[in-house]
Structure formats: structure tokens, C-alpha cells
Length: 222
Image (cartoon, rainbow, N blue to C red; front, side, top):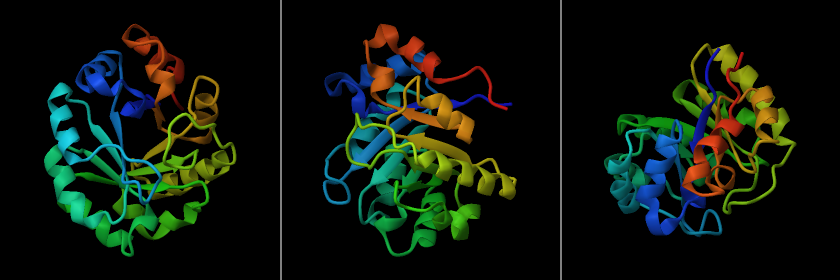
């Protein structure tokens, strides 16, 4: 049995005081800090880059769980490593050579992850499953926060759970999009070991963060 990891997405934090927000969710029990990087090209939005991540790094020792929604990826791997990313997750559609990208991420000292959009099948990770430490199921279409959970992604999650278990490796199975106290238990039942949540964590301000995190996480997972 192991604890389900909670990775609050700072996309829903107060951008005017990100350092304070990260310290607050760290103290409230967050296991990782989820950072969504968007380029306005691969997805229709713009967010953070390596300079912001570098400035945020001193505010917590918790792992930076960085999700790249950018294309191309390879030219920026070293910059994200230097900025302080611990896990770097990429989309198969973001470049022509996924295996090479994952190798480059690990060589830069980070843990590689692969993110699957709602229309991307689980089978995409089969050729690279031994090269990754995290699989991220997108339960919304990437690009914006506040979307509704796509329930069809639960079947994909179950499929990925079986694939991961067959490897015998401790690969994090993470889900992101529309997670709250109602949808998180369904995702956990499907086999996820990490939950990304934005508004569900940051609603109510810092005094509510600890309770918001507790509401997303059961005591144990079998």
C-alpha cells in the first residue's frame, strides 16, 4: 500500500505571489509541484518557461513535476534541467523521436515522463515504457485549466495500470484535468498513483489548501 501523490498545478495559483503559493502548498501537504509549460503553438495558451521555474526553485524542496506542452522539446531540455525540473514530461506528438527525447531527459539528470492526450492511445508508450518514470493521462484536452473531467479516460488509465504492473517497475501513473473530490476517487480506483489538481487545491486561499489536498487523497491505496 502506498500514498497517492498530490501534485498541485500552479496554473491555478495567484501569479502575483507564486513563491508564497508554492510555500503554502508545500506546507499543506503537497508531494510534488506541477508546472504546466505551454507555448501557444502546441496548445493554445502561454505560461511559464525556464527562467520562472528557476526563480521558484528556492521556495520548496519538493520535486518539480514539469509538464511540457511545447514543440519542439529537445532544444529546451538542458534549460529545464538547469532551472530545477525534477520530472520532465513530454507529449509523443511534440517531436519525431520520442525515444531520443526521453534519453536526453534522463541524461540531463531528470526523470522522463510521457503525457497522453485524450485521443492518444495507451499503446503509444509500449515501445518506450522501460525508459520512462511517469505516465500522465490527460483527462481534459491540454491548454486550459478549469475543464470538465473526460470519463472515457478511466478505461485508458486501467489499461495503463496493467501495462505498468507488467513491467514490475515503480512508474508513476498520473492524471490531470478536472480532478476534484468527486472525480479523484474514480481515478484512484482505475489505478493512478498521482493526481494533478489546480482549482480543487487552490480554491479558498492558503488556509484551505491542507483540507483541499486531504479531500483528494484517500489514506491508502492497495
